[in-house]
Image (cartoon, rainbow, N blue to C red; front, side):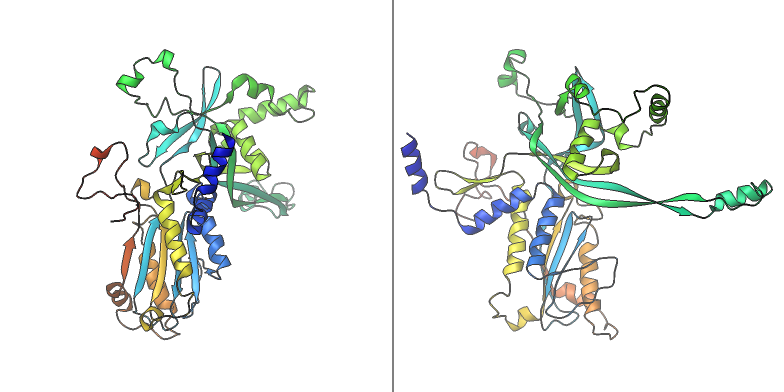
Length: 428
């Protein structure tokens, strides 16, 4: 039997290189943040230069550039060697986000002796498919770094001291000045640490006939650990805290002064420990995060003839990947037409499409218009821009909005209209 399986595998044709690369891209792009980071790495490797929206752009004809916004949206463009302000932009737009379960700002939840993580739905997902999956966590974390230094008397103290006759005989009091820096870090816990369990058939006999209609607030509550196991494995308190007096008093004061907006008050300490271990920092350094649940099962090329890609997040990472590859491949032959050399090729991969696009990093933002304006302005060679360059560029340009489409479903043909549906392998 094993020999027959090996023979069948050997008979299957090798998948196209583009499909293999797509699967690699999907497996590295668990979140919109990771997708943008993967695109960023590929662009840098291809010789693209990273820009900042907060700084002046110095662009050249023939140059290749990109910038990010919120680190979840990325815009990349290649300027033709004969580009002049007012010329055309050829643009492909796609999006980096997908329906998922995001951790709530206050995720600490407990029920029936279990520690759970409160989540909220993002986008239009099939939420029943999230049950009984091996779930990891991924996203962006903000780390707080505090740099202490000795400084002079604070302005508030000086005013207060003056009002009271100069304080201690007019002596200058030194105060500790703390500078807080926030660092953006990506995190991915790729082992199963969470699970949303389905109720057993013995306790829900009608589920197969009546259907499963989960309540997103009460049923979508992933289990992190049991309360007793978490307590037994909780890190020991600092030395001295169990010696009575000072240690316990300090601990009590710390608990009494706990702020509701601190991560330790809003999330399970065990969750913060998991993140800190992955990031190589102390749990207390975590200031905030934007995290989501992810299926740890990897994307794969599948089917008896290696013709399918089994994966989540195809909507719309597949279009994002194709757009990026098209941009990187454009111009590699060196045989460019006059028209192509005179324009700008651009790829825009937006965040927040799944929730309406009306965010600073969504397609509804002025990001595209900002980019067209700035490219035109930066390519004027020091001269004042002529009248209507942006308007002329807009009139000459076109945008392809690339997203996924549905083909005929193999078991539910009635779900698609014969006049508008697509069949696999036949394109349009």
